[in-house]
Image (cartoon, rainbow, N blue to C red; front, side, top):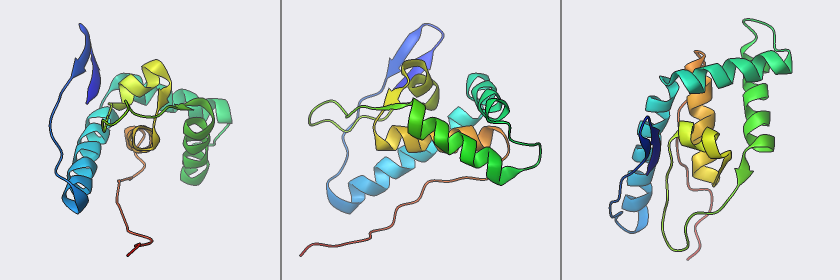
Length: 131
């Protein structure tokens, strides 16, 4: 995991189990990063700037969420993980480099939403199984 600290980036390495257990562990780490990110003043300031720039009215949660989603979709570059390595990064780091893969962007969106009081979480649902 990558996180931005006052002294630079923090890298945490670990091993994920295979299969569904690995997915469950990855999702738990993403939730932890989103929760921490939601409390980060930089993430909150960014969220407020996004909704102001979009012209979302106060108390219009749907408009705020649309603005946050559009920002993550359009402004945060999709960049794949390190080859062969599942890489997770904190929302502040994602904002710093303005890039990340799908899990980094999802984590950022949840953190942005939660930082301004919109209840959000990450969940996983299998939509297809190839056998």
